[in-house]
Image (cartoon, helix red, strand yellow):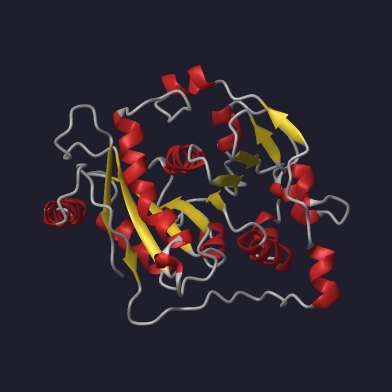
Length: 302
């Protein structure tokens, strides 16, 4: 039995014990031996330094998303009502939102910052990141900022039909661009997007810079009702994913069920050891017992 099958079976057992109404487990793994503080090399805010880094974070431009096109690609859309995909992502987002705003947030630094990643390319991390953002933004009292941090192979803008525009890289490398200049509002209330921006040979250094750390810190505290979702590079394809994981409070590891090698999953999990909360989404799973289902949800321990 593969490691993914074992995790799925464990998730199903937990689901039965809690009389869940869906076919997916809604539990999350949290390091219980000790809560690790996420402490990259970031200068602390103080006085005037903090004021210099403040941004309004209100988008200056609005882009129109083609919801019919997204729906044909299997994404959650505002007009969907109780479809299977919606129910699945309701279940997936539940522990994340609880950790961000509920009792589960206690002891989790930057709990409203969520990184979505995978072990290798092609497992569905961007699909998961976008659907998660859309599902949370559908809630009336939640705002979501979706940041395409997969700067080497950006997919968020292309998937959403957003034309090329300055993004995260331009903000990080420039002293003349404010963060508000790279935020795009959408025709979905509560959802804003930051594109990856241009290709840059020093993108890894920019993502590990103090400026990125300061941005993450401010994003986590600026608005109490906002969730920030980063679509990250795969952990085994680039070092950028591991760098970004140290800046957030929660990580979602997307695993292609029945396909990703156990050794790859374990190597990816090891890279997430410093993270407070790690959840797994089993994508393209055929063992859920639901016709046409492509998603599963489970828990993972280091």
